[in-house]
Length: 518
Ligand SMILES: *Cc1c(COP(=O)(O)O)cnc(C)c1O
Image 1: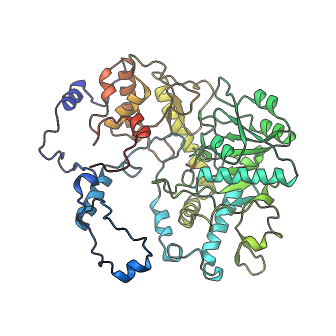
Image 2: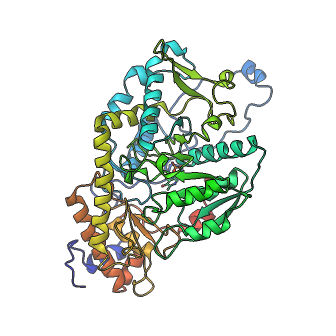
Image 3: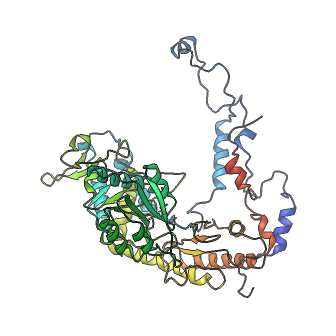
């Protein structure tokens, strides 16, 4: 323990707090209010709304489908409901509250300008079924955003409708399947390197392919020789995450792509980590056939509650005809924009596999992402990538003297720094350290992913964090690493100061309590 412990933490503080119950009668801590479950404070006979009694005729119209017993859900009055959810929301943690070093997810600031533009009534109040001549501005936004994505990636076609990264992967793989089938060459296997994101094998399996692993080299990159060995007439595609989930750039991507094409396969690139290379590398130049881009990562649109994400997919010349409908086309003569739907299939995308969504994608995310691009400009986006990489390397080099950094010798990292738990003492684990970070006021980094590193900790600071923020985080992180290495068992009980103490995560996943009993 030679580095200074800047966090000011003393074991006695935590132990005292852990042993004593809350010192207040209410369970509240100053103005942070304790909040029980809805089921514990609600009553079945209370409701926030008064509905008219259902009469005989309505009951008849329902044809006997109306409920005969009360449903028994706990209700609350409107003010109680508002307070319940507002109190819960204050226990939430998000990017607007503090640093969120979640690896592989690019949790960065959502600029307020984006929000302002997205809320303009001309964008916010339109309907997907509105006549096209009444929503020309919205179609132009979709078209222009698509143009930016094509330019930044060096790819000729784009599908805007997929609603998340994983949805984009499915879109890309379905286009690859359609391309193989169009030439009567159904193939069965998709190769996925160990360093890929977990959604890649899941996507290939959902699309009906058999997934085969390709090992990583000791330096954390795809094993090119192993891929070349495995390629053959049964391989439909290779899915490679670049930069990969070890935080490294796949330097041999072009060689791999050439070999895959030679063997008649297609190259899918998981572009969720595009933040690290935007403006610096054009995936089209690397031989990519399809790649999704997470607008909610690289282009700063909000993450949240499982949506709304947006995962447009760019396509190579070879795959473009198989891209899904609809897409927006600009009529060069009139300058108007047109949404090309099913009926135009023949002349446009001759062999499209169909649609990914009922409508055209996430309009609110399109306006935000385009605002972000226009406010940065092409040079600003390049700066984004450079700053994201610089920040990640700052974290890596501020920690690699005390924490196992398996790929520290593989050259600079990209947008995220990867560590392992190799030197922890006692039976302390990565989980204990992550819980300790909560006490220090940080959302933990991604843990136990990627799987190739034991007890992995993946830190992605992004370009939006200042040096001061990172220095504070590093001080907290270092103090926890020192405790873990010293075998400080009090960490096993962390978090001490969160609204809830450590949960049994296995039971929560295996035996979730989804209904109120008694
Ligand atoms: C986030 C992520 C995905 C999945 O994207 P979602 O929008 O969460 O579906 C896929 N691959 C990588 C590398 C990612 O980081």
